[in-house]
Every structure is written in C-alpha cells, then in structure tokens.
Image (cartoon, rainbow, N blue to C red):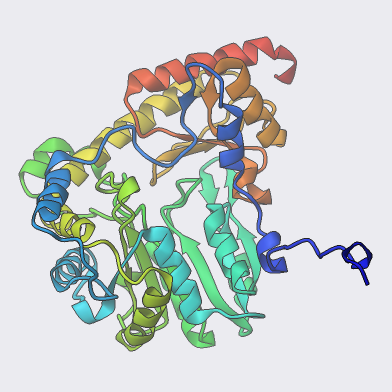
Length: 413
C-alpha cells in the first residue's frame, strides 16, 4: 500500500471537556480594539496605577540578593507567617498550617477545585460570575449548575431559598465570589451563616473567592482621619472565615492583585484545612512547583507595610464609584445601582440585550472599551461591566464617549 492509499490522519484535537470551554468574550471585545486609535479600556479588572514603589523596591532588593531559586511548594515560611497574621487580624486566629501560597488567585482557584472536585461531581455557582470560576470545574469533568442573583430596585440580591434548594446532598462544591465580579454584590453575614449551616448538614465544600474582600465600602466614609487613628473596623467584606473553623469544608481563595495593585505579579494564597496541605503541596508541585521567590518577598512587604495604602485605595475607589454612578445615572436609558463592593459597575443600557455585539460596536465606533454582560454567563446578558479603578477625568472621558455612541444610535433608546 502506498502512502497515498493511507487514510488521512485524524485532526488533532484537545479533549472534549477543554474544547467545550467558552472563550473569554472580554478578550474578544479587546481584540476588536486592535487597530483602533485612542481606546479607553475599562474592560479588564485592574487599576490604571502601577504597584506601589515600596512593593516594587522589595522585589528589586530580593532579586539583587539572589532570590531566584525554587522555594517550598506551599510558600516561604516568612510569607506564610505574614499571611497568617494578616488573615488573623481580619478574620480571627489563623496559623501557618492553614496557609498556602499560590502563583496567582486564579491558580489558587484551580488548585482548590483540583483538591475536592472530580469527573462527574456536581458544582453549584452563584452567578453572574467571572467565567474562570464556572469553567475551572468543567476542565476537571464536573457539572456546574448556576443560581442567578436577581436584579431590582436595590441592585443585585440573592434568592436564598433558590440557592438552598440547589444545594442538594449530591452537591460536591459551592462556588461563591463575594464581593462579586461583575456585579459588586456582597453576601451578608446572615446569608453566609445560613449557607454554611446548610453545607455543613450535607457535607458540601464551600470554595469562596474573596479576592475583592478589601474593596468593600460599607464604612469607607470614615475617611482619612480614621486611617490616621488606626481604624480597623470592617476593613473587609463579610467572610466565611469569620464563621467557619479553619478545619472544616471551607476553602477561601485570595490574591495580591486587587488590594495592593499587583495584578501582573501573579501571587495569591489559600486558607484551607490543615489536613489538605500535604495533598495541596503535591498539586502545587505538579502545577507550578512554587511561586517565584522574589515575588514572595514582595508579598511579605505588601501585607506587613501596605495597610495604609490599601485603606487609601478603598477611599479612592469609592470616590470613583460614586462619581461614575452619578454620571451614568444622568444618561437616559441607563439603569445603574451603587454596588457595595469590588471595582465594577454592572448596569443595563440600550442595546445590552446583545451585549457582545454592543461592546464590539462601542470600541470600534467611539473607542470605549467595556465588558459584555454575556461574558459572565447567560444571567449577565442585558448588562455591561465597567471597571472604575481609575481617575475621574478618565471616567468622564469614557462617559462622553458613551453619550456620543448612544446619540449616533438613537433608535436604541
């Protein structure tokens, strides 16, 4: 038989679970901006400010000192100790036995899922939600059911009865992101208490993405004077760590990206039962081996010296949030509510029932880059997400572009 008689080789494909993952629509909108001059990008979840100098200097010093070698899978001891002290100050006593350092918050989410979820398991997620959280369990072969937040006069709210009904004894894991990306919704202490009691009864793991816990505005009006006075009350959003013991089925994921503006550093951590740590160390080894040593050194400085910076950042973000809410509220057809946490407005506007198409058109026609609501699941359709982590002049420029776009498409109103 000649080579020409052989059957054509099969097309090489990834496995079905990977091929079925939904691509990032936020990236799709960003790609639509390539070649467009003067785009104002509010689509990604990061500030337009660089990481503070005291953190950058710590990394430089660590590099100069030669901190370029492998470290312990779970992180260097000084950083784990610093994180245990930091978490303890916010949420009650925490030991290093419950802390693992990861290569970014999203890596922490993957590791948490790998610890407790396998093929065929059932996962429940509260949505709209950053797509990574919904898709990660699917990579592992799990099935994800969603419980949507409702939107109304008071913004985004949880239907507790609907969530509890979804959390059946067959459920392996609950995913909760609070403060929430994209909505800014915050799960209350009473809601957490109810959910925790229900999950305890049924042996359900809770994986809580608390990356935005410091971007919480309940008491931000206390202002700079309170910071000078050493104000510490309500420095963080309600956390499952406030209620749960450290050795039950609760895994909390966090990151250095938001509270210290370290998005590009890729450093995060997990708070989990001590009994998981040996197995978690194995997973870290087979995923990334360890976070970079010099980045971990910078992390120590962030948590030990960065408190004033973080509290001032929250005040700045609240001012930007309020400024943008006022500006958008003056635009006919826009429905926006003031969220209690995170760094986004998730609002409805004319044309948002086809949000991906709308956002692509806005970036092409007026250079305004916001994220489509559909990127956060079907429950997000009808909305767009605007990251307000920038100065108010930049926000004003974006609002003017939005007004111009709507004027050009007056039939949408």
